[in-house]
Image 1: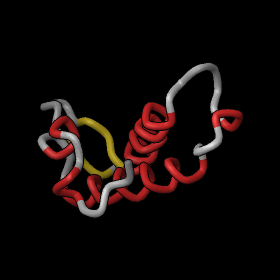
Image 2: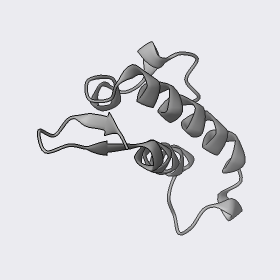
Image 3: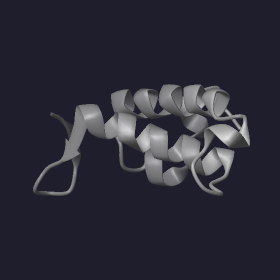
Length: 75
């Protein structure tokens, strides 16, 4: 299910990521949700939602990383 705004994101995203990273997550998730609607587009037996979450985390990790305190910061 696509997210309309960052307030709808899962708590593990909202409680850990800065606002900009949450926006990246939301947009990447929504794009992947559309892109991987067809099961043939996914690897293995991963669900559409599982794939979308993986893509979203990957997008966040392209721009953000955890610092020594465990906080997400821009690279």
